[in-house]
Length: 184
Length: 325
Image (cartoon, rainbow over the protein chains, first blue to last red):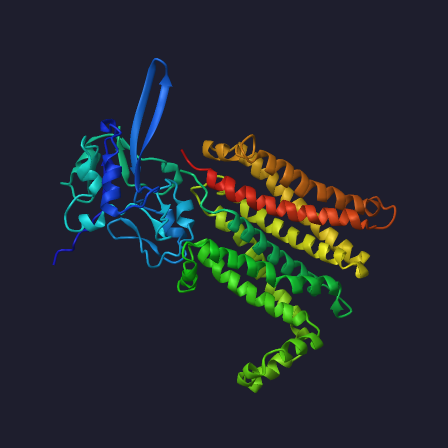
């Protein structure tokens, strides 16, 4: 029997296409019942240059589903864990709300859920991905900034984009091995 | 984002946990050092042993209250995760608290122990097997030295763990240096020393020059060690990569500058060091005896405690404000 090859989910973002409409943020909130005041994804705006040569760039961001997730390492109960396919999740029943993982995340991608008092974060919409759909933020993006897929599958669009386009990751110096790739 | 999620409950816990570690360590040292087969500083040892279990117990309760789900705290003990400083620390805290209670028990007089045992309600006492009761009645003072020695690594462990908890977070450059753990350890031992000194001074009838001299010497050594960790911490930070420089800027011109330099470094570290050295001056110059000005000693002890608390405050909040860009 052929060995089932391992999957590695990742996201590629073409942030030059981002128009800061925040449809991804709204879609995520609606899809995942994210409480008021906290977010699983957001759009960072960075202004640079001097008048009149100004530039604003938008970088959509969320959990980077890192290769070496520091949130998983510091969790004292094992509630933070990583699936075989790389997706980092929280077992809400095991989370005691110590907030150590929030502090340990270099991307500030986790939040304390004010309703359940446990920690929440982006799940890459596993409930959709596992039945073959795309994450809500990817599906909704009107300017097609986001591409989601399996890095191990040579035919997947993420694989093809990363093998042909120059790209970067955010804060590589933190050592977490982030899996959100930003096209240059 | 960068809003602090660990706040004053954690600051208080880090201080109280360290304080207990320091109390046990100093009491243990006072127990372990002997003259003619008896402890050299029995009253220091007894005070330290009597005080040690309480700050850490209060601190552990604060930790539980800080949880989003306090009733789930037991899950900490359903797992052991060696890569998580918090997991190691929670086991250490349990071991340390039990050990410090045993140490306290051993430093009670036999009469006090009997008194406590006689207060157990009769209904409950009937349930305790005779053998256990006989064991509780044994004169526990023979265990003092053994418990002191067993306590050294555990107390140092608790003291250093409070620093490792912060230092092991690579996402926060303000914490993520190899100096924070030792800084917290020596600060913890120093606040323990100062607290025993304060307790001895408040217990006015029995202030003793030999004991005070021992506590002063301990404290001078500990403060000096702490100072020579803080100094390289700042210098290395300034000479480090951009993220660390930006983190250090929080205390060099940033929002924590006053607290760090005035409350911690000058008032909480250098002033007590100067006061304690001043009292030693005649000895150091070979021109006389160690003398004791109780008012200065009280001030020094109080300032050391203030410094220990401020150090935790600055590190907890500044650390969370630091990050990579």
